Amino acid sequence: MPAELWIYNQFNDRKTVVPLADSVVFIGREASNHVCLQSPFISRVHAKLMFDADRWCVESLGLNGTMIGEQTLKTGQRYPLRAGEEFRLGEFSLYVVDREHAAAVGERRGPSPARQALEIERAIHAALLERLNLRKFSAASARGNADQIREIRTHLDDLLNHAVGQVDKATARHFVVGYLKRRVMSQVARLSTGRVEGATEYDEPDVLEEKFEAILSQLCRQLIDAFRLRLTPATIKEDLWAIEDGFDGAVAQVLGQFTIGLRDYVVRRTLTKDILDIVLGYGPLQDLLDMPNINDIMVVGADHIYVERNGVVTNSGRSFFSDEVVYSIIERIITPTGRKIDQSTPLVDARLPDGSRVNAVIPPLSLCGPCLTIRKFSRVPFTIDDLTEFGTLNRRTAAFLQACVRGRMNMVITGGTGSGKTTLLNVLAGFCGREERIVTIEDAAELKLPQEHVVSLETRPANIEGRGSYAIRDLVRNALRMRPDRIIVGECRGAEALDMLAAMNTGHDGSLTTLHANTPADAMSRLETMVLMAVDMPVRAIREQIVGALDLVVQVARRPGGGRAVTHICEVRGIDDVTGQIILEDVFVLRSRSGLKETHARDAELVHTGYVPEFAEVLINDGLLGLEAFT
Image 1 (cartoon, rainbow, N blue to C red):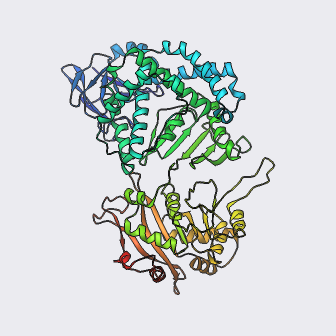
Image 2: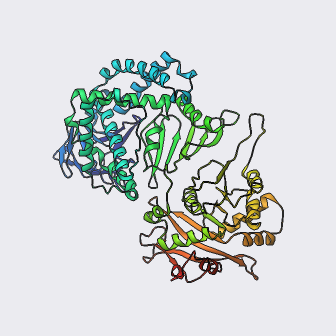
């Protein structure tokens, strides 16, 4: 009998219907499957459907688990499905349906637990708004006001006394699984780094019950032990990815240990945190900001929050209550930076207190509601040792770049978007002398330097009257009057390149900057173009300025798996007398023995080309570099 596979996404209740034309159907994350489900909770090949003896069977293949009711199928276990019976893979509910049972399945398929959880939180939030008129109160002021927080908690506790008892079993399970996952990942981050990640400031001792907390701690340890984790700073992202990939299967083993009292306690804790995050924090973004394995967060309207992990963008399954809540979170982010967003200025760049970059766009420029993009910045700046462990560079090239910075070589770091330019700039700037006066200039302040004498300047957009704008070029010019030993520009994008080159040519040796370019040669062409934005002058004269100013170009690139790698370290040597082009000599290049493209090959390594830069003699004579760097 012809049948169909009905697939419901529990995050948004969207239904997909797939005709079952074959007697064997593979389901998984990879595109080679008959049914492809794009989700981090789905294994590459997750399950298999087979038509055998006049009925359909499902066989579990992946580590993430296949759920039938409260039962988790073991890998390789086969289960005969009754007509219209539900089985779950990650956040998807699936049904094999024929015409006879289609109506019955459609009638009993209600809202997903994730959707019900969102509606419960929406109702509690609306009631809290009604009681406290929160639309008129400042989250920033309340965050530091114990009396206001206490008042909010009092009303919230009263609302939860009624709401917790109304949560059905499936929705409670959703809350419990989400809570355990959040707590396990936070604990793994703490064990790996020694720092507390994702701890909520709203967990007061008087609201925690020691008996339940002890049980939850034991269950979390049990879940952590279910994974083979290395628990080191260098492997934290891999560890958290392993948990993401196999959590559904592991958590099924501990859910049976939950009593009704423990379940209600976790539901209450989860609702409390989620509502307080909306009122005082960054809402559903709060946990994503706390997780070190997430690099970027992208909000598209109220219903879609995407994240980037290890170079892969996926839907997080989270959502806001409404566009109004997204607007309030955007305001909460940009207000402390002195910037504004409205229909007259519908886009803005800003930063979070930890340095993470923020871009917001709202209608009428955005046609899909308010959009928010956050490029996360490490709370504790990376060191050169971290970059060598990550494989961004090796110890020999790290020592070479360290000597170049200490020897006051002028340097530009180039690469594509998200290639790690700012991270490398921050690490290399840390090698500047402690006694030096450093002026940093950025659109959104991200650099965190360990030196004491650092002056950080940040651009400012025009006010509502169109006045008071200060661009990077204005700040570079002003920095020259501030008696800097070094000038560090976060990124050159336009006419400020001329002033930066002038600074490098007039006694501010050891200055650093970044720019977007795919190759070192492209970087030279981009610099020429940016100088022409500022002044009309012969190209030959521009190239002479570049050659006189720059000593070194460091090219970085993004690997397919999300890692970053230095691909070229070049000396800016001079101008070719025949072609008139700038001569770049490779000192170190990323090479692979396997014949694959260097950024794709696992065996790729930065190797010395045999060329010794002209400035190396100065570094060696000053005791900053040894000959072993080139052997």
